[in-house]
Every structure is written in structure tokens, then in C-alpha cells.
Length: 270
Ligand code: MF3
Ligand code: CO
Ligand code: CO
Image (tube, rainbow, N blue to C red; front, side, top):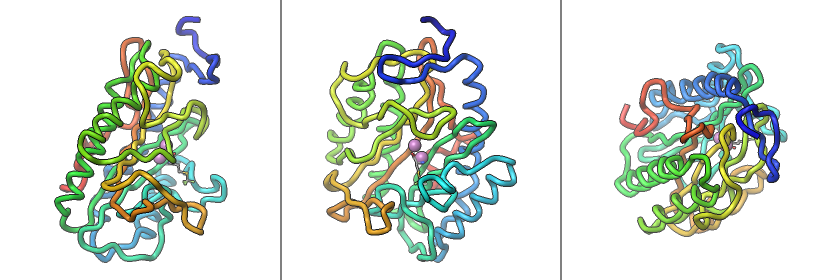
């Protein structure tokens, strides 16, 4: 089939229509705009719970819906993952301290379309090793996105990310992956952040998915805490993550969650 959209591939991946890109842009723009507003809220002595409440307010003020509140019992408008927390950190009353690095992940629903994006922030002064981790993680995401075009495979994306990260002597988390999205939050395929070039499903125009590599300074293994959400590095090493929602175009990629203010990276300088 050509670009008429509205069907599933053999791998169960939905092919969206040209018109559907507009819906994803609107949702992605709101999620990215909300992240743009957060840097002033991140400072030593602040709590992640207060940041989350500000996010929830912004989602509501925009007339949108949080995708995470009520999702599998999750109760917050964001995941906030501090230091050795890999992902799915639950906002709460703990105080941020100088030099903490944190990923803030926001997913909104606008007119039924999902926008899912995350970035890194710092409370106070950014430690040198953390800065390097954040740089590498951001660049790994962008290298993965550069591999997005029709005819390439999902393995090409994973390979671009893994080969770069490991050359920097850091590791790629295997236990969590990106995902298809669109009018649903999580859909096929699993977008692995590691792999071999030329393997996996072939990318086609009209596929929508996230790329969201988690990179550790130490080993890649993770474990989930007793709250059933918080994933941490087993060796307690620092972890970072960046996430964009993207669509495959006729000749490349459309990033739905670009920062309207141009501060996707490094947000922590503002
Ligand atoms: N936004 C996350 C992702 O990138 C999912 C969070 S689900 C939650 O897929 F329930 F933990 F919020
Ligand atoms: Co995601
Ligand atoms: Co996300």
C-alpha cells in the first residue's frame, strides 16, 4: 500500500495518514512546551512533587489530558527520575540537592493524540561526570533519530545508539524501550536502543514511535523498587534519558516534540 495509511504492517505497526501528522504535532508541541517551562522550577531544596503539580496544572490549563494519571494505576502527571533512577521515578516530597540530575517525562493527550517527551535537568551546579553522561545520552538520541527513514530498520536505530554510547564507555539500558504511539500511549513495536544494523522491522512512511534511550555511567542492569514503578541502576551508577516522539516521512523523520523555545538540550543552563 502507498500513503493512504490506516493499516497495520505484518509486524502489527500502524501506518498513519498524512493528516495524522498534524495531530501528533499539536500534542507533541504541548508536551515539549511544558518541558520548556520547567527549568526555573528545578533547584536545590525543591521537591519533585511540586514540579509534578505544576506540570499537571499546565496540562489542565491547556485543556489537555495527562496520559499518565490513571495509566496502570499511576497517579502523577510526570515521571521524575533523579540520579541513579533510570525511569518511572514517582514525584514526591524528597528535596532535590545541589548537583542532582533528573529526567522529567511528560505525556499529554490532545484531541486523542499522544505527545511523549523527556529531558534532563540539574538542580544547582552540574557535576562534570553528569554533564558528560547527559551530553552522550542526548547525542545518542539524536543519532538514533538520524537513522529514521523509510527502508532503514529498527535495528539501525538501536545500533546507532548502542555503538555510540559504548564507544564512550557508557552503557545502554536493555530493560526499557521506546514504543509505537499515536492514538494510543504504547503500541508495537518495541523500539530497542541497542541491536544490529539491518535487523528488525523495516521503517515505513507513516509510522509513529518514540526513541528514549536510557544511558548509565556504570553497568546496564536495572531493578524495580517495591513501589512497582521506580527503576534504578543495580550498581547505583548515574543514569540519564532523553525522549522524542517522531514520525517517519517519505524521506526521513518528523520530530513531533521539538522544543518550541529551542532548549531541549541543554535545558539545565537556563
Ligand atoms: N512516558 C513514559 C514513556 O516514555 C511512560 C510513563 S508511564 C507511567 O513511555 F505510568 F509511568 F507514567
Ligand atoms: Co515513551
Ligand atoms: Co515518556
